[in-house]
Length: 62
Image (tube, one colour):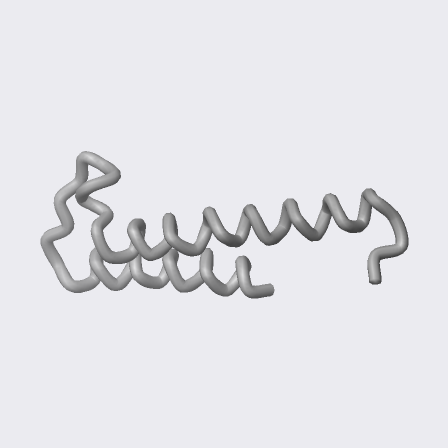
């Protein structure tokens, strides 16, 4: 299945990275005030953080 040990290590690294990025992106998009010292007041600000969350998830899937 894997031709070399290096290919296997790269695939494991990508799985671990995606496993970290996806939960952090959900936290970033839904509860950004817990991570950072900011206060989102308008719907546009909330939508901005949700759009960034979707970009993180999209790049993780890709």
